[in-house]
Image 1 (cartoon, rainbow, N blue to C red):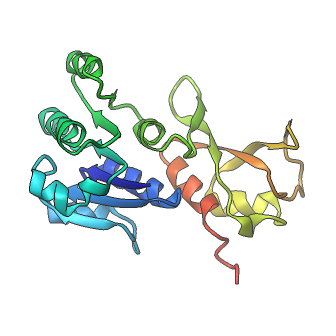
Image 2 (cartoon, one colour; image 1 turned 45 degrees about the vertical axis):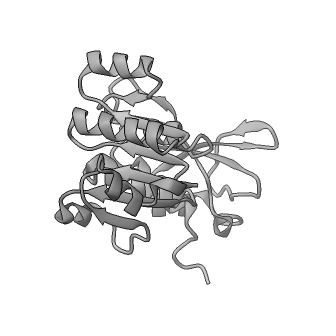
Length: 221
């Protein structure tokens, strides 16, 4: 998929990074060129400076071939204008907007534009709207601090001890689904082909953990 993100704040930069980690293409727009410093070193997506609700800027970002668009800037008005432009003018199939005002959000939901409130796990909810097959939150404990998330694991991890993945990702492997059954890893457990892996991590670090799992081990040839 090709995804365009408007807004390179904490949520936008995290979302763009997670989209790349899931194996998709991404372009991110921000009117402040300094905002792109939030992106990780070696970020391979496109960066476009400009207002994300400007049609010419959207075209520069590749909106005409985009499969999905996320408006996650700090302004409700900018987000909804951009989201409606992507949906109504460029016929983007999947569009989502981050809206601070709950009353406005309800209105835009009725117009057919999914909205996401500003909660700690915003990035994961946005991923669910944009990339249905992407890893996402399955459970978050009541304080909103710890989440259990499904994660794609790069084939390079197969045959390695689960503790190696935990050490690299900073997360715990809560359980794996193996041959149709849930299994809690024991000390010395090794990742096997076709394992479905579920990570337990702090909400603030879960996107990094998912990205580490989706990448080959750093010591791989």
